[in-house]
Image 1 (cartoon, each protein chain N blue to C red):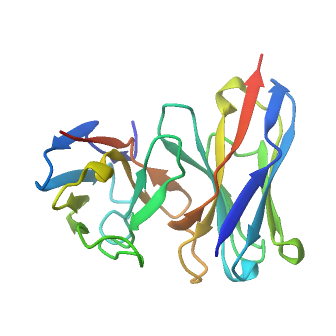
Image 2 (image 1 turned 90 degrees about the vertical axis):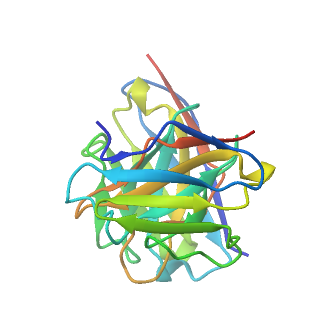
Image 3 (image 1 turned 30 degrees about the vertical axis):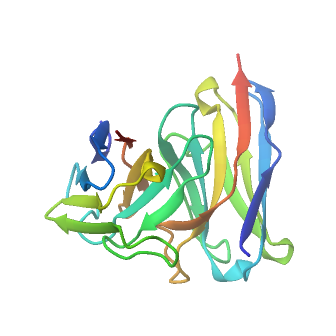
Length: 109
Length: 122
């Protein structure tokens, strides 16, 4: 069982908003304050989209936002665009390990 | 421009060894912790190992503990992963990744290389 659980897939139409959840399996996994999110297009390296729950790196569209509630973090993408179709991974850590969620495939209909 | 370029991937028999490297440029290498993350084709990301800025602190995933060794040479702006006693399940694309900040903690990654492919056959 993964330390971080994500839905396998989500979908939405252009212009809509979608949310991807990421739930920590235990309180040791610091979902409450140190979740990051990565976008990965096919055959490409992952790209950092969100860090420390809700911070966007320079250059990342403000259509991407992060939040958390208890031990569940969320990535919201508003105004969906075709280029957003990709795999998304959440990540967090314990005192000794870094974990990634299983990944969520976003399909833009 | 930050660049991370992996090299040294290849095909190796189970039980064998391989060392992969990551050449860093475009930033002050010894300001940042670094990490290796791997991905089996068609599967998700798996963190492998991390090292702090001066190599004084390292950590490993349980799946590679005792078999893999991470190291760095700040004079050469390079990161390494020595992989011993390789298993078929170690076959993956290995990414080099930079820690997202200079706090000393490695827990998120702001730049990634394009990966080095490691294939272990039995």
